[in-house]
Length: 572
Image (cartoon, rainbow, N blue to C red; front, side, top):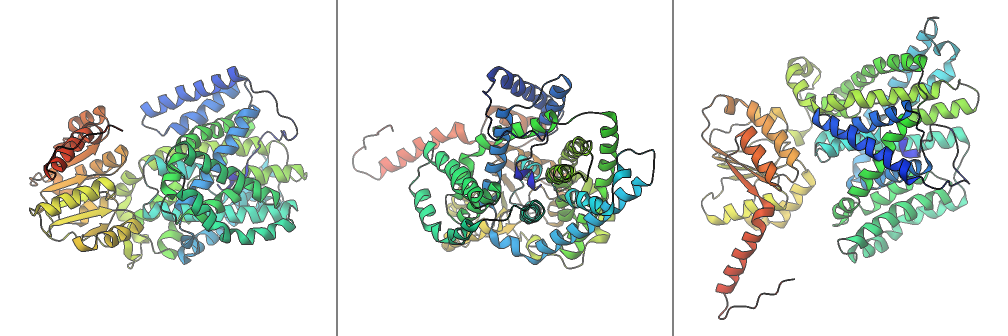
């Protein structure tokens, strides 16, 4: 987006100074409708956010309007989203040359292209709205359209478990750069410059030790969740608002300050449910606040048709300027294939200054929503699209790509463990210590930072871990698996394991039917175990919840053998 992050108020009706009483019954109808539409889209194998957007439009058609509660929850959701982005993003990523080049070059090229196309449509009398645009206004709208939605991108990356992948990290880096540029643009065009208090923000790094102390002494549970809310909404949002800056930027900065803490991931997870529920309001609000008309819908369809040009710019910049693989570039492009809520803020600002007619605001709202709906299945099938277009896409790829995506040698491994979290690490150590697979076990994880930490923590084991994405079709085709007798899928999310299984089923060594090895996977629920065996033919399924008690019991039996008398068991 950026910057739906900036608290969009599409209706133009300010709520400052007036806080209507919440209508619980009305909000219940809204969320019930969101649930029904979200459930239907899941059954259609689409992300639920498509259903949430559709619910907003349905409620709009039925005569409902956005409420103060929905607007507040939407803003809270966006603030928490930016805070959790900061927790996950390494600030060093933002100054990488390829991130800066892709972000800034796209800004110039896409803004110019959109401005030129808008002016061109203005020459056609039969197309409404475009005729009133001059070069300055067209360039401002083009600038807004060049941004991509942070809310949509992060939701998609989380949905598919791709936040730590190379394309996920690069896409988030580009979005954060866009967020900072959006704040600068709004400060320059609205005249809302930072006040004298903003100088105090330079001392924020000095407060990092205090923040670390609070996080160190906050146990998992309600206290950690409350700490996260306080840091995001008070220490981040309100502090920056006090200094004359956008509060959402403060939430992002606060998250970046805590990124290096060992509990940053746990803090992010503690806010997950609150953030997701609040963001449902954001997607509802888009449809609820759009004024629907045939002219607006017609122009919105034209703007939707222009979005592929922005995608082409992203893809070419990623492959050529960023030296990324064709697949990574395509996935980055798909994640960023939307218009941002920031475009709504730009248009609202231009409308308030009399540069644009009022019809442009609902038109842009519909266009943003349509890109969300179109981009959802696009991201769901992005790997299949890559396989279909691979020969063509490789023409854009440089001969020398970034090195972190080329370390795919598994050697003479007998066991491949996919996902080196707590489960994967435990499996690796157990098999290694058994002596049956000495030196013939290879771990695999997509997070290069986590791999480095694992190797350092287990230096005595001399672990072999490669950096690769289990959903990458190129990996399963480029590596040799004939010697592998066991593939263990130990990733934390069920969806990640099923995506990997989809790619495994299409791999040459599987389709040739000459491979005699076994596939093992971990699940958390009984229905997942049934699906893996029925739909994917997984040989060994480990239900971590079911077997946790069994493993604990075996541990206690082993511990009792090491003592002269049976220890008293205390149930905590």
